[in-house]
Length: 423
Image 1 (cartoon, helix red, strand yellow):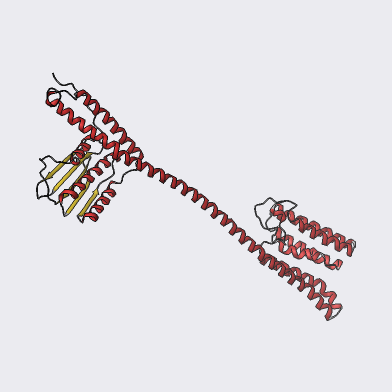
Image 2 (tube, rainbow, N blue to C red):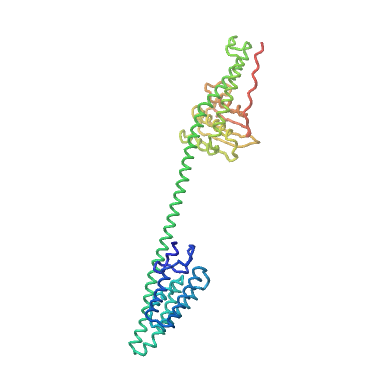
């Protein structure tokens, strides 16, 4: 049995309410039993042809009302059914002088209407009809009979209103609780969806962190090693070739073709490691990275550091990583050797090139003299490997300015084939 078929006035329902559940003749079947049972019992108590005719009309009108209201949902069917059934109920009371069917009639005044006001109005009209039927007989018995007629009509109406009000409040409270339960269920489902989404995000965050850690380790180990091997093999090959005999002191202990092969293999390894880093790293926000490095330098050393990246727009991650490493090396040298009071960093795009400028007001140095460290040499090699250049302007006591220029669409230059030394 469906939910709609279980709904009765006692359960707080009414026939006019459309809850989306399929309806049939079984809908509100307890009400059918009440209507038919009270009418037939009244016929048994007060038999007669006119009473039987009115009972038949009563049952037929109720069946027609149920068909029109429940099965067809015809507009105004509830109001018409109320008038017809109320009139028959009053007439049946006048003929049979038995009011058992009025119990069902007063229920129908509420059941056939979906609003409290309509049910109250129908109940008062039916009570008025009952008083009009009983009052002539009460007048024959004097004031006592009139009092009984009025008490019967008003008492029936009052009892019906009180019961209906109580049931209506229960129905309203039940509806509110059902809505709260549905809202709670929706909230629980929403929380479950949010929890699932958070689990996915947490998993993705873990994957991203692991990928970033792996990329950092590759960059700090393999990529740096390949870069060092490339530069050392280039230096060794050039030194070997300049000796004429192919080696230091006239011995060909390190053949040029072998060095060229080492350089080629190291370049391939370097390219593969950089490609792996590019796949595992998220896009780099170079402007924000510059701000963080400048703030870190100023916080640790007290050197006033300014950054101008207003003319910058994002380029390939590989290009931005090279510029970032160049800046890190420049700031490291300033912190260790310059003794500067202020540093200015400028990042911009000029005629298809990415330009990084770092200047300080520190001690400066002679750019023509060889340096003991490897930092500037490695930085220059990294830039040249990407098709860029490094410029340095400095003198003792006048500070230092570094320019790093990289083409926006830079590509790694191919390694030329090594030629054997001339005999």
